[in-house]
Length: 300
Ligand SMILES: Nc1ncnc2c1ncn2[C@@H]1O[C@H](COP(=O)(O)OP(=O)(O)OP(=O)(O)O)[C@@H](O)[C@H]1O
Image (cartoon, rainbow, N blue to C red; front, side):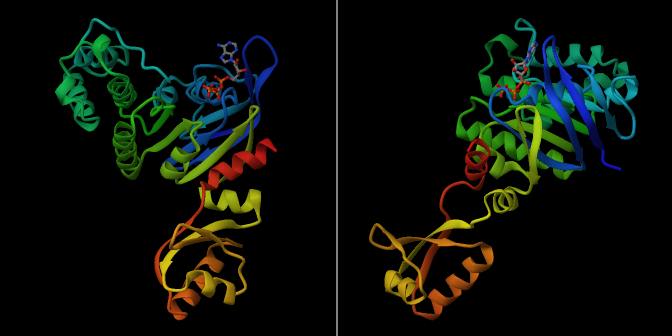
């Protein structure tokens, strides 16, 4: 049985439903929930974490319903888009306060706070007031807060939004380590590049419905189907060799060309044929981002 699953989920606020018939199941690993603004990602996290009751369908965490079983609710740690922190308390005191809210046993509370401070690399700012943190620091404290109860499931709502590339990469690295240690982590984003970089698999949410799920490259193949554009750089007669192999290359710079290929198999065959023809390959990459195509396809 999956660690986290939902079936037939419908949910919303006062008006019409925001989520419709959502079905998903997640095992340990790093999963991305991808969707444009307003797709329902935050709403789905609120339902999965036991905060917003579904109108229909249900959620199971380790086989139990977080909406009716308080223990099951504790199995899910959620970090909201903006971490709710008391601005005048230090980072360590915010975490200590939250550890009490979670009713962690008094003897282990301090140790647990120290552990999450270490895991999220917060030692240097543990004494700093939360109100003076940068956005990136506050995001990391938010994840630390979600980790306090040591939950097997983590739901992180746009944890890297607004971070500079270095901070975002550092946070992604932390998340990868946490997932590799056996956690089930779901990260929401509308950043296509981030989803491609982070995900073991991507679930695409569109207008409150799950419209696709798969490994990023595979999703693109399935949804777009017509292959991708391959950018090759090499020395020697690259353009001539491509033409001899039956391609119509588009030249780039002094040593590059782009061609259309059907998939990875054709890419491998093509690169091998170019090498046989005396072309020294410097680089062969898919032009563009696979998930960009997925989005374009969904919106078209
Ligand atoms: N508290 C609320 N009360 C009423 N409607 C809400 C509430 N929160 C969200 N909605 C509505 O639910 C829909 C989905 O919003 P949600 O925040 O779940 O999407 P999202 O995919 O997380 O978007 P974003 O990427 O912009 O954060 C939107 O139409 C939004 O206006």
